[in-house]
Image (cartoon, rainbow, N blue to C red; front, side):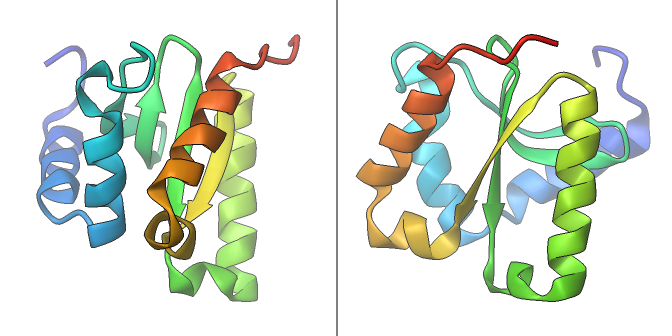
Length: 122
């Protein structure tokens, strides 16, 4: 179980089983090292959060934001989450459902650009 506590494992599995259609579409594009050989995992527990998609090798988190992420409260929560993940050394790319449904190719290109760009120095 690689050090995960049972409740985290259960919650991660539940999130994977109940992914949104946007997450499902993006996962099809990322899984199996389809994106230039980069390996992604989904619903990875990182502290108190579950990151939607993570490339551990490049320390990149891809978060899929639905319609509710436009409210002030959600924007504030997303900022805190991104700051926390940055504190762990991760870069965060936020993608909206609309971007995924509007053209997965553009989303994949943006993720690939983030993967191939150098990480900022700590």
